Image (cartoon, rainbow over all chains, first blue to last red; front, side):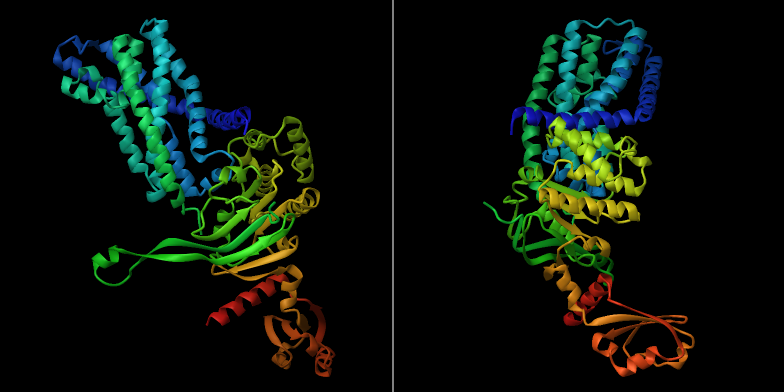
Length: 270
Length: 328
C-alpha cells in the first residue's frame, strides 16, 4: 500500500478523534473548571504549609510561584498524561465496540493511538494553550523561545510514553473487563511520581534520584519547570533522554503484549 | 485464483466458560468451575461470489462466532478458513479492505456527530477516491432515502435511520463481501424494505456476496441459500425453496366457527391455535382432499375458512423441534 494512502487512513482516524472532542465542547469547559478546582486544592495545602513554616521560599519556590506551578501542572496534565486510552479500550471491550474497530483496515493499536492523539491535540488547543497564556499574563511570565521549543518536545514525548503506559493498563480490560480501579491508581501514581502533588525539586536527593529515572516527571514536572525556567538545559536534556529510553522498551512491550492478548478477545463472542 | 468467496473447512472453536457452584462449602462455592464450551463443531461450507446466504440458528448456535471468525475478529481453533482467499485472522487488514460488516444499529457511526462525518471517515480509512465517493454517496442516499437525514447528529435519528446510515457506512467502500448481523432488527417496515432492496441491488450490480444472520423471516426471503446452525454444527445447507419444501406436505387451515365446542377438530389434524371462535389446524395436503374434510368445511357451524402454506417461521420452528427430538 502506498505511503500516501496509509497517511490518508491515519489522518481520517486522527480527524475523527478531533471532531469527536469538538462535539463535546461543553465537557471541555466543565473539565477546565475541574482542572482549576484541582489546582486550588493543592494551592490550599501549600498555602497552609507556607503560612505555618514562616519561610518565604521552599525549594526555591515562593508562594506565588507555587501557585503558578500547580496551575501549570494541571493545564499540562490534560495533554501529557490524561490520555483516554485505558477508558476507550475498556469501553470497547465492555460494549463490544471493539468488533467494529477490528473490521477496519487499520490496526486497532493505530486506531487507539491516533484517536487519542486527535483528542489530546484538541485538548491542547482548546484548554492547555489558553490556560498557559492566561497564567503567563497573571504571573507576568515571558517564555523564552528555547523554553517553548523544549516544552513542545517534552509534551510530545510525554504523550507517547503515557499512551504506551495507558495502553498497557487498557489491555488488562481483556482479562478483567472492569479496570476503573487500576486506572485511578495509575492516575494517582502519575500525579505523585510526576510532581503533581509535591514539586520534585523539594524531595530529598535519594528520592529525586529514583524519580529522575522514571518516565512520569516528563509528563508534569519537567514541562512545568521548563516554562518556569527553573531547570537547566542539561537537566531538560537528561529528562528527555530518560523519556526516550523509556519510550522504546514501552513500545516493544506494548506490541508484544498486544500480540499475546489479541487472541484472548472473547468478550465479544457468543 | 480462488473460486469461492468463503471457504470453510472443519472449523472448530472453543470458549472458556465459568460456572458458579451452588452447593458445597463456602470455599467451593467461591471457586468457579472452568470448562470449555464448544461454540463451533467441524463447520464446513463454501459460498460462491455473488451469493446471498442466510445464516440461521437459535441464540447460542454459533452464528455470531462464525461471523467473527470470518471477519478476522476471532481465530478458529481448528480447521481452515479462507475469505476472498485470505486467512481472516492472520491477514485481517488485507481482508478488511474488501469486507463490509454490519453489527448492531450504529456501530460504524459516531453518536454525537452527523452521519456524514462517519461517511467521510470511511472515505479516508478505505481510501475511496473523491469522485467515486461523491457518486456512491448520491447513489446510497437516494436508494436508502437518507437525503434529508445524513447531515443530522446520529443521536437525533430514528432507529431505522441509524440502521440505514450504519449499513451505508459499511458498504460505502464497495466491499466484495458483506456480513450483516441482524440488519433490520427493530426497524420500521419502509426502512426494512429499503435495506433489503439495496442488498439485492448491490448483489445484482457488483456481484457482492452477502451473509446475513437474522431471526426475521422476511429478511431470509432475499437469500437464495440457507445455512442452518445448531449447537455449533451445520444441520442444513441448501436452497431456501428446499428448506420450505421440507415440511411442504402440511397446510394451515384457519376456521371461524360459530360453536367450536360442537366439533372435535383433532380428528382432522393438529390443533395449532384456538382463540374464541377461531381454530387453526395443521392438516396434511392429502387430508385436505378427503370427503370427511369437505364435510367439515360444509358444516353449518363453519362460518369461514382460509387455507395457507405454512410460513418460514413455522418451518424453522418445526426444524428446531425436530432437532430437539433427535437429540433426546
